[in-house]
Length: 253
Image 1 (cartoon, rainbow, N blue to C red):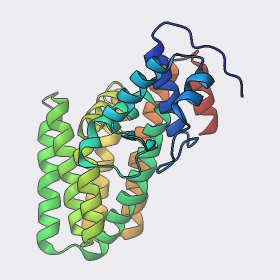
Image 2: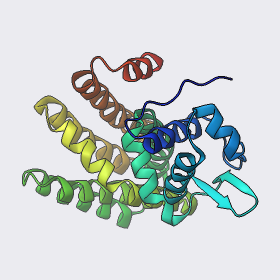
Image 3: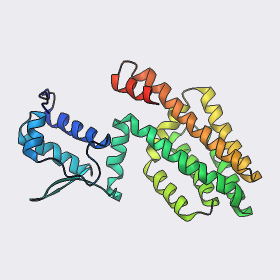
Image 4: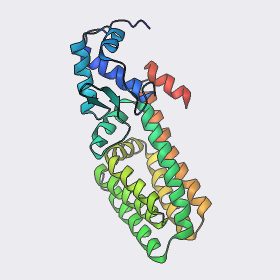
């Protein structure tokens, strides 16, 4: 397949972005061997030196692994050191933000459901305490502290589900996405209506869990994450109204 030469705004950056996008969209899947360097350079109409620089950047980001004499492979394991590169990916590829919300919906809705069914008296006390702590921080206008308190509430709910793998998975996700969640909260608070609704949902999900209403708790957590998703969509429409990639993404949702 013939490729148009990449404009020299920054050849290395352009090639890096192109290969990264091909990994994100599944053209190159985890564990795949990338085409030989000579072929990639020809496909992108760049020098092998520029291509190698791009591959070095991708390896630093944790996306590929270069083996001497063995080619370049797409990483198939997300290591602990991959957390920062993953955050970079999420910030630069909007579709991943929506996929993260989908993942959170899958896990957090289940956590709320089982918390409502299995929470002990001690669990309920802890969940109520975390909600009170969150309410106290909301009025201070400190997004980083609010994000941490928000996560502590969701972690208390996850622990109350008494499902160790589920709780551990959510802890890892929250640890990785703390800055992303802080950014989401800042977007929500830009409109008073959404901010009030967000905190109302926190209160409602806690009351439903304490009351043992598993289906109700699952429903409210889902609505909670949909509010975050919809707020992000609204922000995209305002900040990038003419971006073709953004419009194409939103048309898929």
